[in-house]
Picture 1: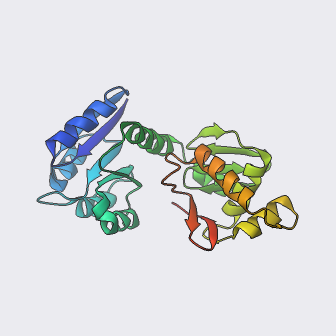
Picture 2: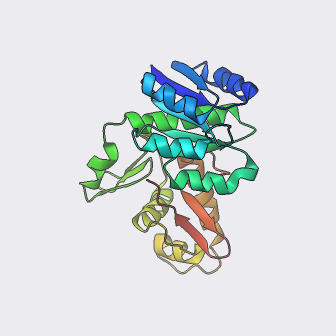
Amino acid sequence: MANILICDDDRDIVAALKIYLSSEDYRLFTASTGKQALDCLRENEIDLVLMDIMMPEMDGIAATVKLREEYNIPVILLTAKSESSDKVLGLNIGADDYVTKPFDPVEVQARVRSQLRRYMRLGGQQRAEKRPDVIAIGGIELNDAEKTVTVDGEAVNLTPIEYSILLLLMRNPNRVFSSRQIYELVWNENAYGSEGAVAVHIRHLREKIEINPSDPRYIKVVWGQGYKMEARK
């Protein structure tokens, strides 16, 4: 049973999150300020924190900074759309993920499960880094010798074209490839106006590796230029 701490000063949001997560085998703790969250962490064995950004006494950014001094547990930020700059700051100082208010219950459950799976894996990414045929970015692990892909420890079935696109992007994290470049490198032929096929395969690939394909965390569009695999710790 995983222990989850929900930290938000809005009682309605806390109540809603408790309902969303009640169907899972979790033990839930609550706090309404960053300071209370840190106190709860010291008094209990917490496996994951859902942390609001805007709170009195100590906000979620400051609490995450303090938390990271002692703990490596997953932190998922609870953000409003207007808090995009704080969301980026939170990810930069150690948060692992975020969900945006108003919440989609299915997305909240999926992100919590995803982060817990990653946390519970026994150093899977570190083991992967010792094997030259394995590439790991965030929760995605690609084994090119076995031609397998897992996301947060769960196997994903890709078509040969999808696999080849993913391999290309993962071998070159943060490098932008145009649709034409991807087509010519994957299909091994001149594009001749067939770049639209790339967009179709990218969409299908996102549906298989992203929790929310409409808000992808890995395969990013660089408008007017192409696609890239965003390296994530």
